[in-house]
Amino acid sequence: MMTEKRNIVEVSFKPEPFESRIEEEVALDEPVCIFVNGEYHATLITTPDQKRELALGYLLTSGVITSIQDVKSISFRGKDVFVELWKTVDLREASINMMNLIVTSCGSRIAEPAFKLLKIESRLTVDAEVLLKMFSEVNKSSRIHLRTGGTHSALLCSGVGEIQAFAEDVGRHNAVDKVIGSMLIAGKCLRDCMLVTSGRLSGEIVQKAVKGGIPIVASLTVPLASGIKMAESARITLISLSKGRLKIYTNPERIRIPKTERN
Image (cartoon, rainbow, N blue to C red; front, top):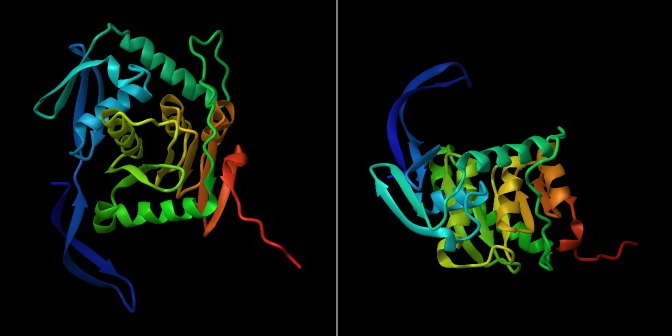
């Protein structure tokens, strides 16, 4: 169950103030704790589905794992997820490195950082019309959002618009982690995919694409400065759809735009 119904008071103001009681559908959320090798790592507030995908995607995008081959087993106890790895990891160091990436993307300097930002090398190109179609698919597929208005969505697709993974969640970060986790489980390559999301593109969201090696990231909302800076550094193509127009902020060469003759 992803939603529940609540009786609420609704106030309308036209043609004059009027109070009524209605039944409203709201999106469910719950805390999920992730443990790695028996050690507590993080608590995520999430829509209660796709916990395996969420955990794997989160561990990849936070730098704890580099591929599905790092994972020995995944188990569940109540609402919590327990991930056993083949290797030992320093969870504190992974968290510090992730924070350093975000701080750097916001323009601050860190002396002798212990990480190197990946540079995305990809020959993927996408027609502008495919982008528009994928934005439409995000809206049409967001069934929980259409009913409640309380979730974000993310999808991964090929360069020709074949949808590889889709997820909804109360958190925009979680939705991205879920589709990335879905691809890990399916053994599919992220470097040939485009990420399309409903959430704003901050440095944290773009960082997730960097960790997955995703070359094109698009959103139904405008990006923040931190997202643009990180996309520039990582050679990611960053796009938004605003008032029916595509806005390409970085690395526009990956988007094929039809040529028209003007008189």
